[in-house]
Image (cartoon, rainbow, N blue to C red; front, side, top):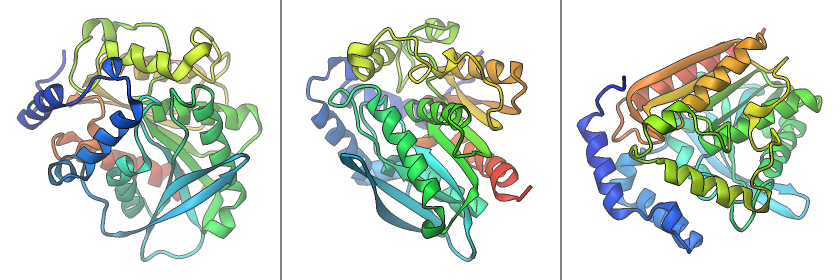
Amino acid sequence: MSAPLPPRTRAFAALMKRLATPVEEATDYAELRAQRLRLMESPPGRLVFGRPDRRVRTEEIEIPLKGRTLRAIVHRPTGVGGLRPAVVNFHGGGWVQGSPEQSAWLASRLAAGSGAVVVSPSYRLAPEHPYPAAVEDTWEALGWIAARADGLGLDADRLAVMGDSAGGNLAAVAAQRSVSEGGPALRAQVLIYPAVEMYDKFASELRMPDEPVLSSANMSAFAHLYMGDAYGTEDPLASPLRATSFDGLPPAFILTADHDPLLDNGVHYREALQRAGVPVRYREYPGTVHGFVSLPGVSPAATDAASDIVDFVAAHVVVPR
């Protein structure tokens, strides 16, 4: 049974229900993204979404790929030398919205707490750029970062991927491809309320169809917008839970929220990895909604989750083995 939501979280959820346009009702997706960005950059938004940790140095770089250039935010810990381990982080937003900036609170705290560099690339968004554009962008960005690790001050032998929600989907896909396509070798994957199944409705979605922040109707709309004409494909590049093998994947930390219709996506992925012998740390955070790790101002558990991620990355990525 889910724990009660904290008052701050309930108040935020009520405000967003009044002010935000649900994705299934939107027709102008550029405006939907602009609306989200205005909220994040407003004084109340900065309180809700948090500010980057001042203990890191943040810079913007460009990742040139064939026919396009991706923007990336890099969070570097200060006071440490040598080639640093790296976590490549993919933002959430249903493959339709979101940006590297929305991950800055977590990414910068991970860099400050673990000593790893966190690189958060952008990727093309649907419906203008439907599947598999985001898959190819994030996979090629990971390869570009690994190939140029020395020039970026990174240790190519100590890499991990991380992502939340849609970004968790993309991180899981990248981890699978790193095995099936022979690299880049990854030491770990951090999957934060990951969307690993595109179509099936699991028990958590049936039990909690109208939770704050993410509803069952939102999930269906995001999936249709992202998949476009490919909707219905069973390709694990879309639904990593449908992979035929999970053997050899890097250790995983899967985080879920107890007021989240996506909860069982994380549970089923944990079970699939465990059946394959992949080491998994799993934690369901009580009194939390989907997206809570990006909402430190209204979700007290965000700080606990960030600390847990720091510990996991420090143990599996930063410490040489």
